[in-house]
Image (cartoon, rainbow, N blue to C red; front, side, top):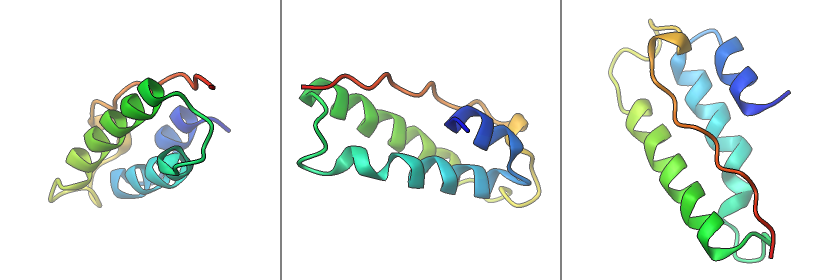
Length: 77
């Protein structure tokens, strides 16, 4: 299941954000194999998820009530 599907199927926005971060944790490892530009795109993506995660009403809102960033393409070295 892709991240977009995971986000939309989560019971609330907090879990959706948590899943999106967990599924992209590996992109922040030094030896992940992605290009530097791609890693930077994932940093930006994850920062946008963190902004959503800081909302006070995540437990009461569905993921569809937020605008989620587009997942970057994986570009390998």
